[in-house]
Image (cartoon, rainbow, N blue to C red):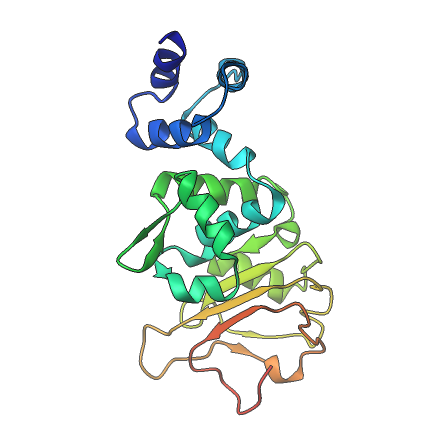
Amino acid sequence: MELSNRVIRYAKGVSLALKVLGSFLLDKGKYEWESTLEKLKNCLYQDIQTVLKISYDGLDIEEKNLFLDIACFFNRWDKHLVRRFSSSIGLRVLIDKALITISYGKVEVHDLLQEMGMEIVRQESLNKLGEHSRLWLDNDVYDVLNKNKGTDKIQGRRFNMSEIREIHLNPHAFSEVDYLRLLIVDRSKYKGKYNNVHGFEELESDFTELRCLCWDFYPSNHCL
């Protein structure tokens, strides 16, 4: 009973945090409960993100990557699309851990969990955008592409063709991005303005690791 009360206290009255912690501790023994709660106790500046991250830390590498992909790119996507480049087992694990839900055929992640995932990516490199594993803000994508800062740390990029500043790509803009798995270019919001990124046809990259390419109104007759 004491352990349960400590879980409730650490959740700070946030039902999501309680659900995530409860899912993580389900079927675990007393030692694992005490170890998890001790970890939370020892966090000097404990907050809800710290509580939520307990469940993320218990995932394996592939499951962590899948969660970060969903948090940064695929929130509210059709579950069948997400399953094309992920494993059903991985999705099942994330559901069981209360990190994602499937609602009306969509993969969804709670706002607090999404922010946690994005913060995990931000912490990968505080000063070098090109060393983030995922880029999802138009300004960040522009900065990396415009200054050719891409590195082999980048696994995914997402940007909006009508929101990003106009750019003419250097042919080597993707040359160092050897492990790019995900490239998502969102639909333009403005009629007649589909393409602000030019030069993809001249890129010197074979995109051998690319698993997901989603690009409405791709501005060329040629395929990547």
